[in-house]
Amino acid sequence: MATAHKRSTYAKVSFRIPAAMADEAAGLLIAGGALGCALAEFEKPRQRPRKIVTLEGYFARANHREIAKLRATMRAAGMLAAQARAPTVRTIADPGWATRWQERFKPFPIGKRFLIVPPWDRKPVPGRIALAIKPGRAFGTGHHPSTAGALRALEALFAGRAGFETALDVGTGSGLLAFAMVALGIGRVTAIDVDADALENARENAKLNSMRAKIRFATTPIEEVRGRFDLITANILSSVLIAMAPTLMKRLNRGGRMVLGGILASEAGEVIGSYGALRVAVSKRSRGWATLVMAK
Image (cartoon, rainbow, N blue to C red; front, top):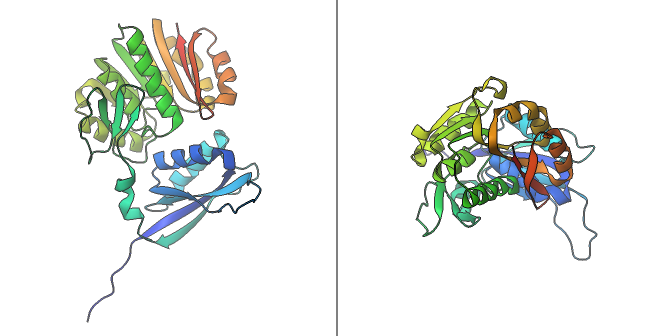
């Protein structure tokens, strides 16, 4: 007797968010492992724009611990509606789009030098540094404006000077910023993240980029990191950047630079104030997010 084909199932997680934050929230969910995102509401002609919308994220499975972490990150970044309840989670049958997620991740340029590519499409582009990233639960595919802003800041730093020999990437996520620093010429990079899953993804990406030997990955807390560095990157959240400011400033060599990202534009002033021992060398804004380059 023939048996029916069992269709795969996926988890649909719905968040209530401010409409103005839809793109940023979707980028965060994709970086957090979502296969895709969609808005539940459709605008009708002459309809007044909605202030609050429902963003649906589609995941391979419902990992409630990971979803809770994503919600906390979204809350801290102002991406949830003021009175939003816990996100709803539903199991759905594969509607056909989930198996085509690879088709949606195409190589894309950032700045003048970088090209972010998926492992299955690594055709070189003259004049561009290709960095391969396999999408995973870790943050940092380059699509989010905070990651793109940090990459542009690194590109500008290396265009204007040399002499960076050691670097520290705090909250490395997918490892993208660490790879960029190696590609730009830094021989020794330390990349830390408290999330073991993120480091597993970063190590896999390091192998894809043939950079495993030049990057030391560790779950070491920033307070336990030893030594000083010529260049430090930290693309996290404003609240975390503020909390670790005293420690990060101690880890930066005199004459060094620090690239800070993951900062909502409205919170840039508070972050700058917490790094008072440093001067602001560069301040850039893109789509509501700020990237800071601090100098010692």
